[in-house]
Amino acid sequence: MNDQLVRPEHKIRIIIGIIISLTIAAVHAFRIGSYLDGDLYILYYSYASDIIIPFGFYFLLVISETEVRFLQRWFIKAFIVFGAATFTEIMQAFDYYFLGVTYDPVDILMFAIGTLTAVFFDKFIFERFLPNWKIES
Image: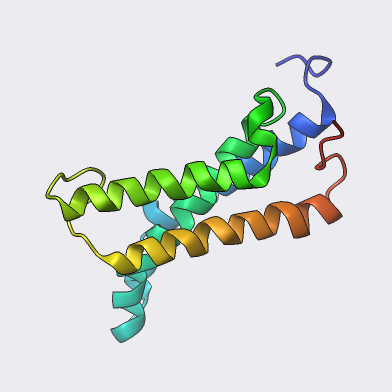
């Protein structure tokens, strides 16, 4: 990738998006939940992915927002992520096993928590503390 072709606000998004994605992959690959006991073990395996995967997908969309203008608004990205995750859960309720096999309405709440946490990091942490994060239209 030619550095002159990548704008600073896009470069920081790529770096953050990759770091978040690799961290989520590592959490799953190293089976962090296997080190927990009792109720924490059950909660982790029931809901952790329902929080961290929407968080990660939000930042995959953040990577694209400098090129895909309609993604520049946080609520559009949040709607896409939450809508897609909720759709997969509703499909499970109707016995269409799409990215999972057990319907649990609490999963939808976890999707919302993951998505809103990503929005919080995007708008209140990264936008304030990372140079070139905010896109100047």
